Image (cartoon, rainbow, N blue to C red; front, side, top):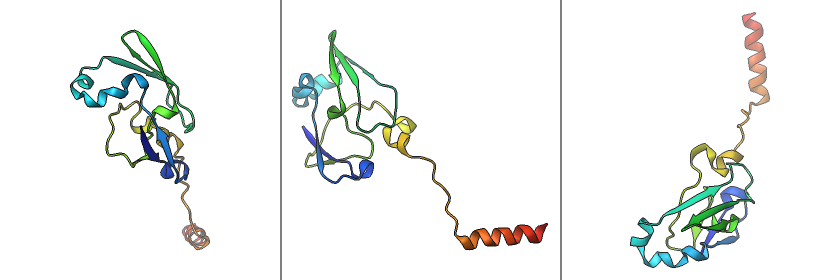
Length: 124
């Protein structure tokens, strides 16, 4: 169990609870087992929907569903929890944070636009 703050993602400052799968909860006391864990994670294609995540963790032939309550998104901050173990599912431009960042519109003042027109007309 851990708590995260997602103010950078959605502007909300209240803490949200995230939980590990019940099947992997006891492993934090057995780091040696974590390094030899044989699991496969299957998740949805990268998208920009911050409120939804679907996937499955397969271990020893059994499938366990993963949801939004099991993940920490890039940009979220861990709070009231010293540490966690995790697996990276998306990196770089495939993260939900990057999928949500649109192109930045270059803002120009009216004076800049006027000066550009004057310079252009002088050149012509």
